[in-house]
Length: 555
Image (cartoon, rainbow, N blue to C red):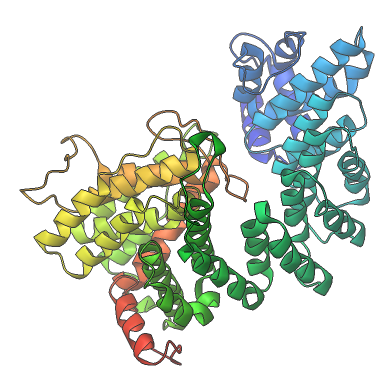
């Protein structure tokens, strides 16, 4: 009995960033005869296939490492150290690849294995080093001299583009201040011939937001690099919004330009210049919207762009997004005296997050959502709006030519403000959009989150849109899809596209927590009577427009 109690205590003390705690757990598990599916962790490692590893190839041994979780880390680190003594160079390379892949699938990420992964970078083998760099980028190591000594040489390998790309990604993901040597490396990448390398150089320079040299380089890149113009402006807008906004507005206004007379280009020649300008214009407008209250200086110019029909839906949406952010910034403190009221108490109730690893942490939100749904239809719609709105950018930034999801969100806003059958009909019609499976997984799930959220609005009796089956729970489906979107996973079925989102995906646990926080942040102010993110937004927008788009001191 005492041994089982000791094991339980060691499991609770096991920390992904502390290899010593995992070694204590490993020693206790070895003494207890711990097995995963009938074999010990080391027996499974001995069964790693003696051939080059492929990511997520479904082999039993790799799956068992994921099941063992943090308990497998000490054995994997040992196997990496022993790889030099394998019978052949190829066997040594394959063992490293298998161990790196296994470490990259364990949740939570075992950051205590970072030194071992850095050691892998000293060995030959492009594929394995690329995998190690990808795992390091997810683990976000601190920018120590040892980490920089291991990663920077990979960035300079002129003959290996994939390794250079992953090295730049790992550098941009490092925690803590980066030295000037990394800034110089990022600047040098802007002159590379390959588009992807220039793009990664922009991400490295995003870590140096205060340097005038970097800001000037970003402005120049936005002018010179047609293939990465919007990415350069995205990075610049994060560092210096006032310098990026005029250029973003210029890109948006260029969407009005028409192609010169003549027949359209054949399909095999790709996107026409006019179509590309239209898409870039929409993306530029959306980037301004992502600035939140910092984009308020663009409101007057955005209002003028509403006259351009192809931009109008997104311009309206972005003006609302900026106005909502201004409203949040100006909002009075929440009335804590109302936190004990039933709805506020339900919103603030603790979620029973799973203590152990689980395949789908978002399942923990289901009872919480059920308790909120008991407060009526308006609460359900507001919760769905908050979740879907939080991930909508993942759809819009990757498919700006399809505005069904954005129009659905705006129709839901109007229904909350005025719950008429006409507005419900509008929600039903716009929300019945089905995204293509060839979308990226995060965009696919974000679009489905909006689709499910629209089903929380009561369907009008004459609606032609398909209604969900009786057993479906549209609120839970909406929130679940939002969680899947943030962790770059498709919902319902597979999505086959590649994501263009600049940020790393969140873990399933972190994505569920972020969606939960987004719901509370948007619904609680209304529930406790402080301000209303839905109804107060159009009122503030009207007031600012009447005042020449100047932000009032208080609203």
